Image 1 (spheres, rainbow, N blue to C red):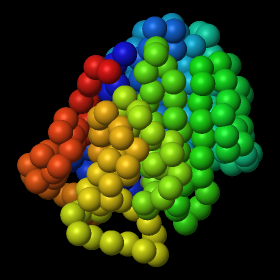
Image 2: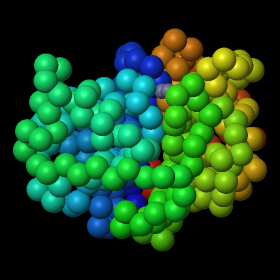
Image 3: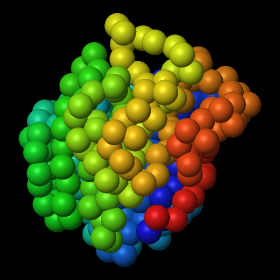
Length: 247
Ligand SMILES: [Zn+2]
Ligand SMILES: [Zn+2]
């Protein structure tokens, strides 16, 4: 199973990356996590012939702005958009005239699947839990091809992130803040708090993404995280756009 980081920035695009989106290529499905501007690159990696699933963590624009590029995709087997209760209403307001082509006019069928907190089969097993953010935000634990991939952005440290990440083969968390930075009024993770979640969850691998655009202004800033923390978390992945890893 391949995991490709299409966009690895938080908040806005810079020369270091597009906003958040991750592609998971499984045997049966193409699964996309969030729809920042990185989403527009997905067609470089997939034939689009498999059923496609898109999970939306929350509605901050860096996680949905790429939806206006959906019109270039074809997805002959359709796209299922999964998210917290209310997802259909919010996204049908955002992906609409006069802003962009509405879902109903896309060249493929779109279906919404609103998930309550808890476990679901969509058809593959998914567990959703609320994270800690100024607006409701879901983390997801996905069981795909016999492996578990957990995605927790945007959030501060919280028990739900640890529960979702338990024994994951790959835990993907955000890293909006630099080492030692705190942001109690608008929770995000720094490398230390992301690693704390990964260790408490006993995740086999930890990948950091969603690097704050104002905070991590260059690749060197990300490389510092890799150098400083790779011993603390062996196999630590500090994502950059278009990085593909095999799980
Ligand atoms: Zn964000
Ligand atoms: Zn956010």
